[in-house]
Image (tube, rainbow, N blue to C red):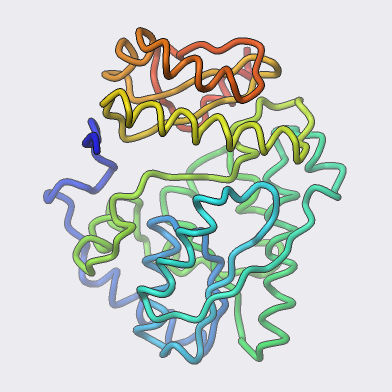
Length: 289
């Protein structure tokens, strides 16, 4: 399998996690007593879950994953494998954000409606299970990102953010995950499928299924062609698919007809490769333009 061409933040051994921050995280989790962890399967929520199990014991922790059309099958399988490896209890929670007009309309505040729906459901699960709190894997860097309406929605619901409260940055989360032997320490960020759809285009089950199929075709095509990239996305710009990979891989992908044709075959009218490469939040740039 091709090796990644660029490591995630904190993947190098130069990042050190202040022991005081991990101690603070442990104390904060102990003070919660019991918790439902909003579990996406990424580096942040995995570290939070592992820390919660260490602090509280598996019987007082429940990992819960929102299950809807915006969750890919790949990620669905991953969360089950990760929680099993951590010895944590896990459940899928059906969310109905597609029934919410504000979510379907896909404005820049879409994530507010998604997180409001998810955290509302997780609070119901916590009440039913007799668990005192709901926690998300929000880290200290996330709080500085202006494009995170979901964080505000979760805060409005009273959801806690132990990683951020302990001051842990993304790089420190990855470094701690590596030190703890978590398989997610170097996992690329993989937000929900709706994050691939350009703002203003309606979110539908069909559109999400097409994005999932396109990214699967891209991943398989890159593997067959021996093209290495750490990040990959297929952005849905309507009938046009925009492929994003790490910038060093851009020339090889643009020259690989098999990869482009595989993505095109998933139902887009045209496909192109972003010459600037992968950038998290790049749809915000398109929205501004």
